[in-house]
View 1 (cartoon, rainbow, N blue to C red):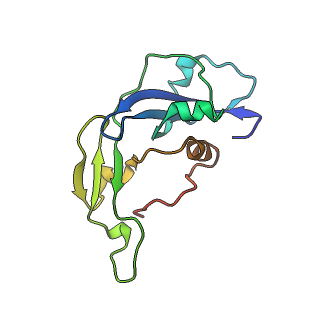
View 2 (cartoon, one colour):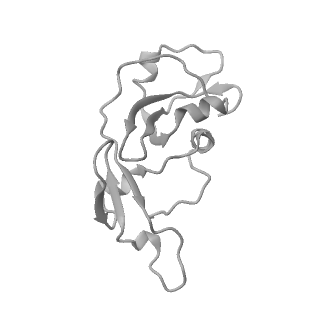
Length: 151
């Protein structure tokens, strides 16, 4: 995303399971900077990813601003993942082999799943992410911080 384009996200919930963070969904479509799309059409677009963030921090950092309010919050079937297996020391099992992953849905308890398999492998990173990193992913398609992988 450069200065000639803009992207939209939508606040969808406050997740008490993850520090009370705001949960947003970020849409795939990129708009020209001078366009004024109908917000109902924006939220009808495909979702690129979901994330936990503190929206107010992004406002204070002047990374985004409020565009409006749409009551359609999507299907709400997002799944998040996390593990405490950060870093790999010599002789230890690599993170992709970790059996200490857990997953959850918004405002539901964490469920220890061991190794990630099936749909759990597609779960979004569940940590609370800095607004700067949200913008990075919107621009480049990936986060620019180290996080345990599983591929």
